[in-house]
Length: 495
Ligand SMILES: *Cc1c(COP(=O)(O)O)cnc(C)c1O
Image 1 (cartoon, rainbow, N blue to C red):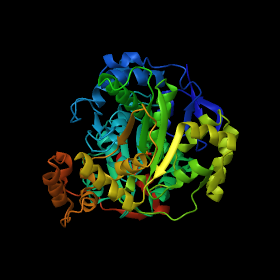
Image 2 (image 1 turned 60 degrees about the vertical axis):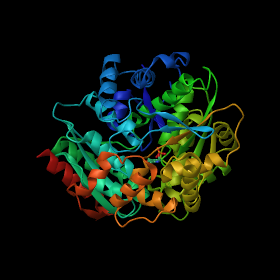
Image 3 (image 1 turned 90 degrees about the vertical axis):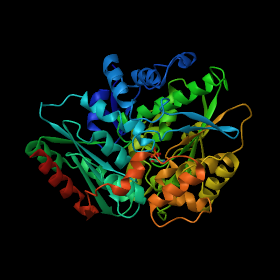
Image 4 (image 1 turned 180 degrees about the vertical axis):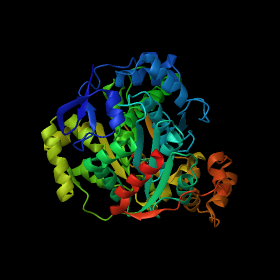
């Protein structure tokens, strides 16, 4: 059986189910397996499979201790009627390139792909005693929070608490979270930015005293729905194969031909899934990281120095406003050939000095697979406008970072390029209208209607309906108060 251990030590080995239940390793590292890619996915056979079939195959290769039947049940529940496109992640031509639409799930962002299935994975992991409850703790830059709430609301045996940076998410994102229904959900704004909230959540996971208290007094264990959880990461590997299958079916490529992907990136989960796909045998020539003005990853991939000591920008692509990109740690682990000492040294250095340097040979290997680009806010707006003018297709500001990056990256002849579109433009209707040079009305809902008229498309009903939904959550707290907030919430839910 393939086992998982921390990126920072191999001392403790756990099954994939245990890794998913725990979320993050006790030493603060992320769960990885050294068996990644030992099982390959049959590329030529992809055209015979629909999305669900591809998901069963890919997840089977990544989560060895789930039975075929368990995976089939999880997949059937996660990728059903709640998606508004039968292909789940449809691929469409966009000029000379392609776009993979990842936003057809219930909350209109790509996070749904993973967060519709994660609660189903969790339900199949074993509790240490029958009435133990899992409390999901999530820091969100905007989209994870809602997708996690939608996935976990009223799931038996679970509770969920979401922290988001106060005033740093869009109006639609805020309302999506603040109006969430369900008896086991809690939403709270934090004074600070996403990195502050994410770092605090990580230290709450490492707080042994709190863990003891919760286990003994509330029968509760904490887990994570952020992409630090391996159960959040692996479902995202599936759509890289689904994109490839659609290119095969359109006869754009033959089995074995290489494809390039360009991915709007924040916490490095989405693009890392592309690397996992490559390890499973998908012919990926290049994975291009697209950042917004918070271009810490561009600098890292260009120089080998990761340095978060820089100004933090709040932009019109809030889900990418991140300076500590957690999943980079998993990538470094694999490119450093599993050198846990090196990784824990780098992460110590990041925690104490805010920076680290990777050895030149490791950087050289990384750069063979990963390219990088970024867009400032004017470039994001220009990309939205350019894409509309050329293709009559509206993209959101996150996708626009990738559009800009690809437009400025030299094309390799004969290699198709796929942009991953991570959110519906209706989640950011104001920024999109302004980019298109249209006067934006006062409310985001009027903006949705204007965007709908202008583009001839329809706003997702769940987004448009937020206008009249009841706001349930209004708490705003400081970072140091997060631990107490988690304790109180867990105790209340346990009553
Ligand atoms: C979360 C998110 C991203 C960044 O994805 P990572 O996996 O964190 O790199 C990009 N775009 C949107 C719309 C998102 O919600």
